[in-house]
Amino acid sequence: MIDQRFFDKKPFVTIKRICELLSINVLKGCPAAKRIIDVTTIDMATDSDITFFHNAKYASDLKKTKAFACIISNENKHLLPANTIAIVVDEPYLAYAILLKEFYSIKSSHDALFLSKKASIAKTAIIEKGCYISDFVTVSDGAIIKAGTYVGSNTTILHGVEIGENSYIESNVTIGFAVIGKSTYIKAGARIGQQGFGFFTGKTGITDILQVGKVIIGDDVQIGSNCTIDRGSSNDTKIGSHSRIDNSVHVAHNVEIGEYCVIAAQSGIAGSSKIGNQCFLGGQVGVVGHISIGDKVMVAAQSGVLRNTDSGSKIAGSPAQSASSWHRQTIVLKRLAEVKFKSDTKTFWSRLKLLIKRRS
Image 1 (tube, rainbow, N blue to C red):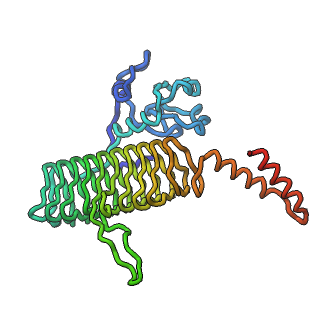
Image 2: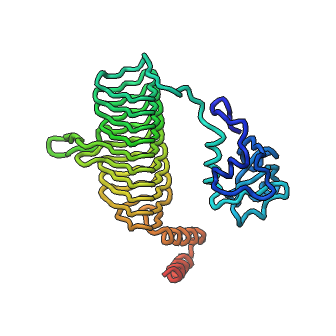
Image 3: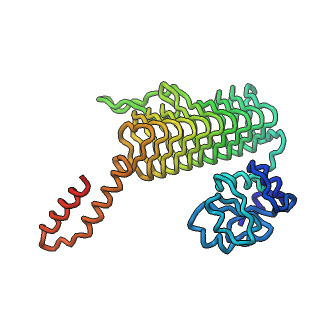
């Protein structure tokens, strides 16, 4: 249940408006002026609500839903009960995301320009029209915050940083040595542009190497809570437009991430590695330094990527290899584990040879 203490909600949205948002025609016999009160889950929906179906696990719930209408693919519409109207789309979950933004918005107190008297803004900083600067924000000399940007409390914007139009920076964020595109969303606790992990070890000990690059973040990028993105050592650290980075991800110096990438929580990318466009990294993936990952690569959760990876690959395991090869290995190990050793080692070795022969 969506708690309206935290979200504003429209009182209703008509079927006609819903169809306009989804770029489809109103079905014959479906009342275009019908007011839909909410968009909600299959089991919670009433005859005044719209729901959505995109996961076969909920097929049994779908047959019992009381929803007035359901966003559903053509191949699944036969699952609906007679009382529920099918609104057929190619991608039901995408349609749900679109409608959710129509019904709900985050409660906000920053509808207009506001510069808190409790904020510390340097005289040479540029704050463009329509920005909202919260309490205890620090904006240093030469920083530029472009029109329509929100900056949450206790955030620090260091010297020379540029933040693009209509960006949203949550509380307790630190940004330095960075140029950030428009419509970027940086969540609470993120640290961007700090000194990277670079040093020389020799006879005299450890000597730190000054990192003289910066961070470049494209347009419409999301950076999760408590992410750390180091500035480049000489070249720049880059994150391409429209990418999504989950919470607690580390991006080291000189890393380059392409456009439309998705990187799940607790992943780490070591220095100077390059990731192509439209790549997906599952949770807790580790990427070693100085390697290249091509476009449209999918990396399974907890994999360790140790070498260059061709575009279009699906890899898994540690060290990462083709997903099909990794699955075969896990099957072999599982079957070996089922062998009862006792004192008869011949059983074990004959089983092993048989498995190897079958997989070769």
